[in-house]
Amino acid sequence: MSSNTSFPLAYGHSYPFELLGLSQESELNRVVCAISLNCAHCIRLLPLLKEFEKNPTFEFLLITNGKNEENAIIRAHFGFQFQIISYANRDYSEIGITATPQAYLVNRQGKVINHRKISQIDDLKALWREGEEIDTNLLS
Figure 1 (tube, helix red, strand yellow):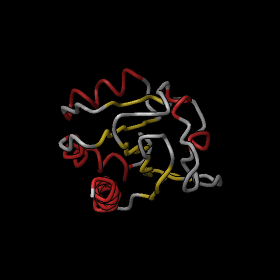
Figure 2 (cartoon, rainbow, N blue to C red):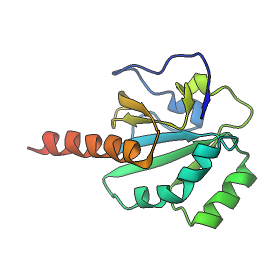
Figure 3 (cartoon, rainbow, N blue to C red):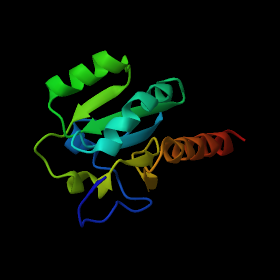
Figure 4 (cartoon, rainbow, N blue to C red):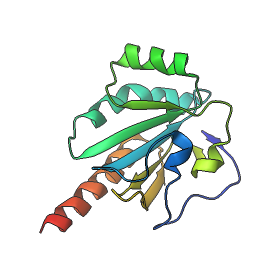
């Protein structure tokens, strides 16, 4: 795992999607997962991310410190359909990443609901389920 000394974004803060070239609001809640291509733990998680493109109620975004060409190789190798965003040669702390792998659950308005350091794939699944519960509660 890779880490720095910054602090994660708190509940209710706007996630800085503009730094990723994305709009703040979305039709779907989003899970934003950041990895480092220099992190062996992150690389081991890559094949397990395929299942996160199966939920039509969420948008899964993968951010890497790799260049677009490296991300294209990852996409082709694993067959990912979700968006992979390059944040190469930039400071992850600008987007609230304090360690990799780390993920944020962000609502449709672009506000942070929760974040987690990802020790295992179940941590990411738990964040995903939390978002599904929020959607279910909104509909009831």
